Image (cartoon, rainbow, N blue to C red; front, side, top):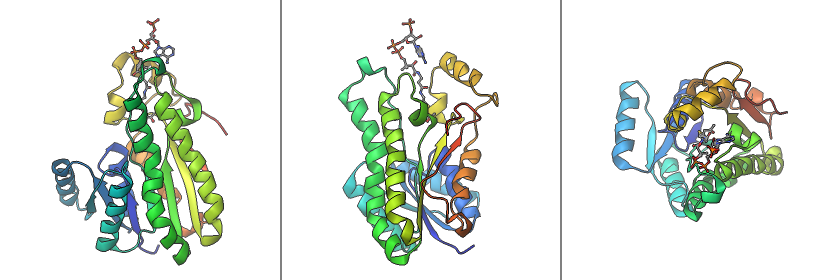
Amino acid sequence: MQARVALVTGGTGGIGTSIVKRLAGMGHKVATNFRDEARGRAWHQGMKDAGFDIAMAAGDVSSPEQAAALVQEVERQLGPVEILVNNAGITRDSTFHKMSAQQWNEVICTNLNSCFNVTRPVIEGMRQRKWGRIVQISSINGQKGQYGQANYAAAKAGMHGFTISLAQENARFGITVNTVSPGYIGTDMVMAVPEEVREKIIAQIPTGRLGTPEEIAYAVGFFIPDEAGWITGANLSANGGQYMGW
Ligand code: CAA
């Protein structure tokens, strides 16, 4: 497979790290962003020690200006972005009747507005070069809803609306746009859910366990090769059977 330039947002996180490793393992040149310099540096060193040479750029994807600057920096280091994985995401869980405007806005800006902020600076180049891969990391909770996550579920469902519109607009330019909807994965984000709530969630998963970040990275990797060029606008559930929508 031809080596491509890939940008994975939020690549220093639980699922993000596995996606970065998977794409690098497929032979692509991979970059990610960091918000916290010290954390970014430590992550970068850890990846280096593990044999991965990953490009890094500072920037918070919830800010349009910072997102544009980080894309520019990645392109300066590696060349035009050909694969984009919109993975960065946060939770601010609260039942809606207790939710603050800040909890709403932080989740919408980081999880959904970031898709605009990062995709907008790369889409024209992909259209000109007539090849591109864009993958949104949504969530099972954007498909089925979740008690305590009106903000997160709205953002994650919105990401798939973004996917299916962008897929239509860009199909004839050799660009595919797809969504992966992970279920509950054993990352810090899920481990922050109160233990008794988490146990109840695991009891609802037919496989009887949380997923692994590697299982999500595998699903992302599926959309990248040239052979996947006819698959666009899809939403691939990877959730251990917890939600079997179609
Ligand atoms: N269904 C029905 N009732 C529920 C419920 C559910 N799923 N979850 C909580 N409740 C009930 C409680 O039993 C409790 O009832 P009582 O008052 O009768 O005892 C009541 O709701 C509590 O409501 P409060 O408004 O007081 O809520 P709280 O302040 O205690 O916090 C919560 C509730 C924030 C939702 C907390 O339960 C929580 O964090 N839940 C986990 C939410 C979750 O799954 N987040 C996913 C994070 S991981 C992720 O997002 C990754 C991904 O993509 C999958």
